[in-house]
Image (tube, rainbow, N blue to C red):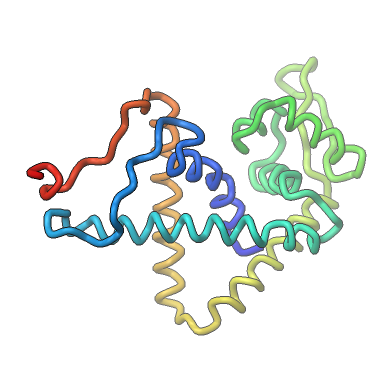
Length: 208
């Protein structure tokens, strides 16, 4: 799986909810895809970006099952994410892990139980609270995450073999910036009532 792919994947459902109206708010009205004279100069890049993300989402959905079928150790996608977070951030409680992966504690707990049984995680007493437990990644988990990272890197290296380092770095920088802004936007969506949301009309539409 390419580097950063799981980060994009985490927000694919939110993108679909926002753009198709299945989640927060209502879908914006259908509009012609050609740029009208009254639209701002930034309208076309925004449209290209939104359509590009939508295309990426469809491609991801089509290929996700195939990639999972070939995953090392037959580890489920969501479980791989849990292991990656624990390897990167270190020991933590289930509640904190659930927050970091944007999931509910009960779902995470079920996955954690399986990971403990399979030897990928261990439960240890919390030094600050003996009644609580922290989850710790084992060497088996670290090896699995490292193998998956190498596999992701190899896929991206092959896919972008014709790109020079400048273009690769530019893409990586903009992707991280986009994801950060998406995180901020997601927080705003959760905090506001978007039922009456409609995109701003163009100058041509406002004078029609």
